[in-house]
Image (cartoon, rainbow, N blue to C red; front, side, top):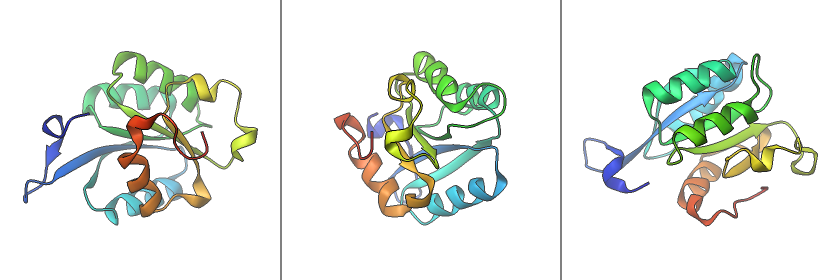
Length: 141
């Protein structure tokens, strides 16, 4: 994603548009807090199910989606597959409580660029993921 395709804030700094997808309100609040503490990240929407994530990704055209794996309806892996097929420029990071070695087998083929354990998700992790997203070899994935 090039800077000129992203929204810019009042100072002209690129702003990463984020969609937070999780069925648990406490984690959505935590993810929103991490984004608000990380310069250049702006949450533009939230979704509670896989189907809602697919719809909101099409509607809101976020740059980055923070996607839970276990969701009602279609899971986060299938939602990621659908989103990245429709909008390959959208960066999806899977978040869950799995240890990396215990991820479902199809997670790595979903189109997501990285996996982060929810307990480790913090502003420095978010910034590092965004900075290195094009490498294809991100932490834990």
